[in-house]
Image (tube, rainbow over all chains, first blue to last red; front, side):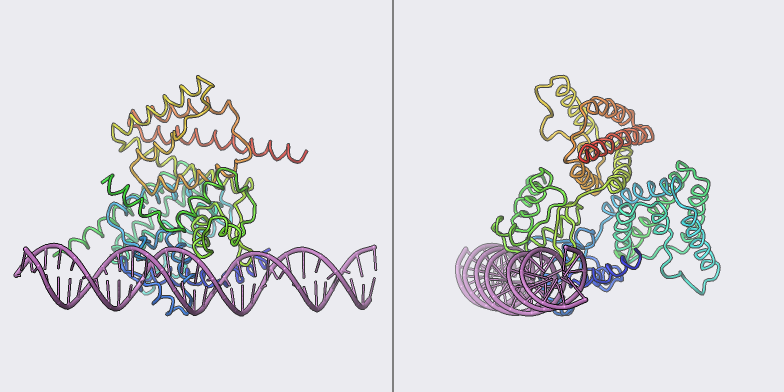
Length: 228
Length: 228
DNA sequence: CGTCTGTCGGCTGTATACAGACCACAGGAG
DNA sequence: CTCCTGTGGTCTGTATACAGCCGACAGACG
């Protein structure tokens, strides 16, 4: 099955519109296209060596993911989030991540639990050794979502996470947050290991509230600095 | 603002692709297009008096809403859900509705609370008088989501609800569920009135678990009857 | 008789072309 | 000098046209 799935995925991305979706998502999240920036269809299509119809389909997909805003008659632009939008996205993320934590505590397979443990040790060692800022491809929440065994929930949580990542693309998270986040991750993980869904949800809620508070504070500080 | 919003919405739906989205969504949810049915782009485009590119964009949007499945090289088809997908959607809905209930208990304005009360009395009178099966446009969860004051959360919950509605399109919900659901709605509403977020979330979780159990039972019964 | 292969039809995926709307800027009137 | 208006350009929205792939069916071979 894995060979079939891999082969199917290889052929699945052969559509130009899907390639455009991936390229555009990377450009938006990497900051190559900044929030609020207008996207010219003809210019982008020419740059990607793609015709306009596939590009327009890609823009519709990214609009569904919340990364692109489409205004009828005025075209597309990279999504930009004000504080209210960030707050709304935060509530949405709380809903999804808390349920993920609950389900992970209820149903996570043992090897999935071990995968989370491995991730956490990697993050921890990276924090102790400032040489490596953050290991690539390590994603606590993504691994936890996989452990919860609900792909739709994981996809939804990933979409919201990317929107929030775009919202704070200008302001990096403060360095002291990483240490606190690690402790909060430990609390969630402990609850998952103990198979305690209520505790896992509660710990996740605490973690999310702290993360959102820090993020909102960063954005407010950046906004105040920008006005100065 | 409401005049502006209405005017903006009127002009916003002038794109053929958006019209196609609305028409297709209605056809899928009304059962005019049944789950699993293939959608021919040329035939549907000709029927809707629309060219294929706008129709393809509409299909991409509905794919993002989970109502259409797009297989590269093989075209589009109406989404069909097996029991595992329904279970996954149920967990997703639990996550969203529970957070909505919590937020409604925390922040709902007084008039929003009264709007919920009005809806519930309408549903209750409709249940007592079997002449009117169900009042049109009355939607407890939608009103509750509006009371929670988070449009993104409300949209996400609405999307999931529509997917589940499509999943059980063949099997109607059993009549005794309506009465139990009304009681469960009362419990949620009472918690919202008492401004008790924990109780609201708990009551919503109870309600969702019962609703999902009833739905899965209906689908299993229908599947067993179909095999017979 | 079963199976494989080649061909044909239909469909999706993509590109090009055209029409209409929105915006900016210049010119003129008050 | 300011505001309005007309015109031009640019872009989106839509339609049409072509190429490539998938699937089905018929025919031939084992």
